[in-house]
Length: 335
Image (cartoon, rainbow, N blue to C red; front, top):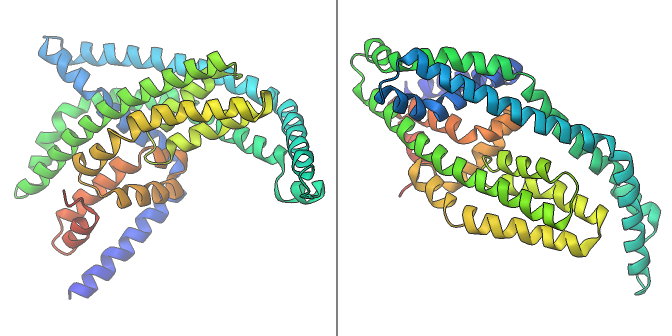
């Protein structure tokens, strides 16, 4: 009987995930809205404690989101357009750099045919991949109005959610405790992650600005956004900046760019975030990494951004089913 239930549950899980992948274009704005709602919930509660009516509090938060979203969209849109217009120039420059490197290596007696290098590494493709990724990021921002509108309705309803859960599951106090624990832990996660992401973005912007890398605002914003992606986000943020430094100035200044990313990521991500991700959210580091890959496959870059909260929701669901509770124990942290 247990084996049958497990097979049915596994089949249902596969069907749900397949449906999420097919409906990703619809799900992504909603998931981002839910993410932003949780992020702004402490502000809403703070305003309510200060005596502001719920409607006024929500209105203040929405105005703030419109300002921040508009500013982010403008800065990213302008920088991405400027970068895209210079892709042909960057492609030519990196080809020249590679040819120079091949000639340098050949001077030491190692013969590398240029045709072989071009066969395995196309600089134009590498630059175009970066441009396409940035364009995909800009396309997410085109749903800003829908996202903010969804946040508005979620914030208006959020205070009634605990009551609805208790009415819907009157005999499941453990479920309510699990959900409450999730939101408390996730809020702590967001506070630390947002603070470190802001500092990372500002540091990278200033570092690249003084080095003289093109579009430092773009790479600072990219570092801020990708810092929400566990484990590999900082690496992904560094790749285009380092590549651009090689194109502009050569390998020496590219080394300084690498040093800048190492300073901020070892100082913050290496000391603070792993401990919090491993203990505060009750997930093992291996599960955090695997969830990054899995949700990135299902929902794309936004799935990577939301991999931790989505996995936490899944863990809560597994914990409250006697047939799947063992899975929640396995993927949890033993701390």
